[in-house]
Length: 138
Image (spheres, one colour):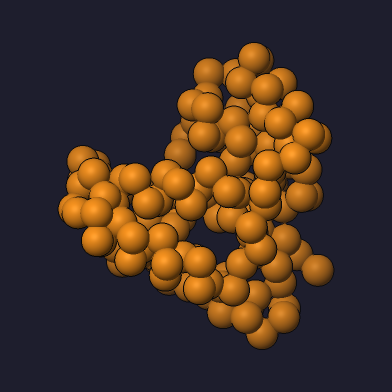
């Protein structure tokens, strides 16, 4: 069964109805029907929560977090193998700490990484690149 790992940018695209939101919604629909598996790295939950809180409000951040938790996804939690892989990625590539965790999760899960971030191009894993935004987020 095909596995996908949704980066924070994919979750924000879905939430904010940005370009690529329909692709993310389709992947989640297929996961709900049992045709594929969608995952989210634990750090994406925190990233989504704090970004929406910072840009909008605490209540909006909490709502975004709860809505994300209700999606038909598996959460990839911190583990020793994930920590080691994230550390290796961070040591070798110029990725943010969160992106190192997310990339490591995709690699360890054997998942296609769904994202908008060109920084992930350095990773050797299948990727589904969503269209970039015409305007940048705050």
